[in-house]
Amino acid sequence: MLSDYCIYTIRDSAKFGELDKNGGGNDTEHKRWVAGKRLLEEAEGEGKRLPIVFARAQRAGALLGWALVDKIIVDNKDTEYSFSAFQRFEKHAHLKSSLKKRDGKPLDENFIRPYAICRTPAYLREG
Image (cartoon, rainbow, N blue to C red; front, top):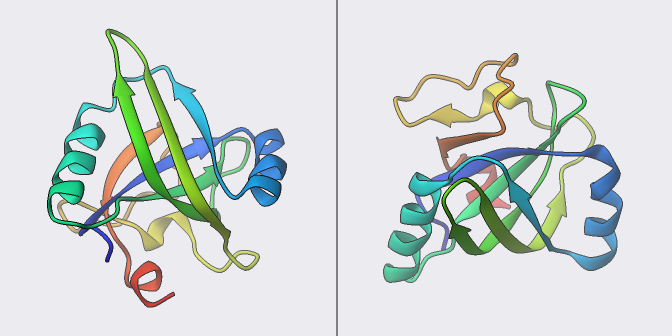
């Protein structure tokens, strides 16, 4: 069962090929994902999984795929995270605006920050 919330993030296009081969991976973000770490801990406490949704850093618009967060480590200035069970979306199946922020408003198509907390969309729960 998935958490009510998910993490949206961007990833360099060159790194997506390894996801198709390995089904997961890890990365470091130069932002502190404090809320993301708290959501992961809450999800684990409820026996749920925290999804992470990816878009390409070089192109706005369509979401590329999603996975399940395994670990989030936050230090003084960075976040290291790992994930598994990566699944690619069909080409242009879901736009960034299909994600809703915590306040229920759609994530803007021009949102360029590398991290956001969103409500887990129904298409992840159904798929």
